[in-house]
Length: 525
Image (cartoon, rainbow, N blue to C red; front, side):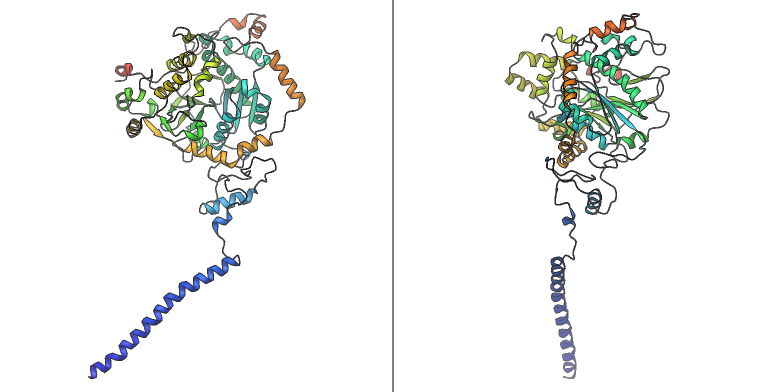
């Protein structure tokens, strides 16, 4: 009895303690919830999501002075400090933007970026292709662009936009330019002569080389460190750099290296209705240089799917050259030096992404640019690569329905099982960074803002542009007008006296070439 009377007070004490604890656990969350509600109602809680600019929920992270998504000229611009701080706080406290060279839609680089990189191209494309290509490479750190324009790219409403972009120099294919190039050094040498006076792709190849020669001079005057020739259907993929930055990639190149080769990856589209390749294509076929030999040759037949070569078009990539004395182009894919054999390296991870035949309309656009007959013999005069020849014949002789069927059989990758197999083997690869960057640029409104902010051409400029168009003579297959060649050569016929190079005299221009063929397997063993 005594023991029982002793245990009663203890049980009562435990019960009282448990009751108080239960009350505390129930009341505390309610009190905290009430306090949070009151503070938020009074504005005391700063919701991170509320800090995202309400005027433009689509602003691209890392941009200062981002324009709103509206294409209206009256759309307000965000404050630079607000955009930077908002982005940093939302992404977790980082004070640096998503891309180290993304400094507002006008891309105002620091006063002395290192290294300074320029890109040169020869293009007749429209703004829908040039602007994404151009601003993508600005994101990667390119500071200067030399655009040699003709066709659609030279139209006043297009060129005015291009000229308004900081770091862009537009060069028109005028009679004066043709006459100047007719007196250039490479026009008088033998290494490029084999491509003269031929139509279509050969003509373009010569124009590109002549333009690259001029771009070297412009790059030197602009104090550039590196120069790259890219077409407007190519994007640099700087894999292997500490940041997704071309500038960081080239900054890490040893000082004794003169030139850097970017092996090319070829786009592998999965639909026949692609409208915007840079934003819609993520699958690429890797270059021979980035694959084990056994994998490349072992999967060759499955990777070609009956096409003439491993790649539809070229396989020798592009290169970047350090600006230095005696530099010259060596065709559209390579550079060389008059006075020495340059030290050249090939990058093991970085590549140039080639978006070839990504749109069904590419078939007819190539057809419309050339006047060759659609025969196997005649197309050899116009095109260097087998697939270009086949595509031209199909586009010139087949109906729309037949063309679409051929396009799906030879270009579009519709077999998901085969795609998965080649992805696992490493022949195909997924690359999403360019797609994400271009999509972000578009959603930020940068393209529409660039067009809107461009000052309209004056009436005098429009009239001058029309006058230049009327006065241009038809260019011969070399890219130079007959009149300009005769004028340049009338004095001493130097335009027709091909001088032999003192250094590397036997070296010819490097044309676009196909990757190794299955027949070459024995040579690689």
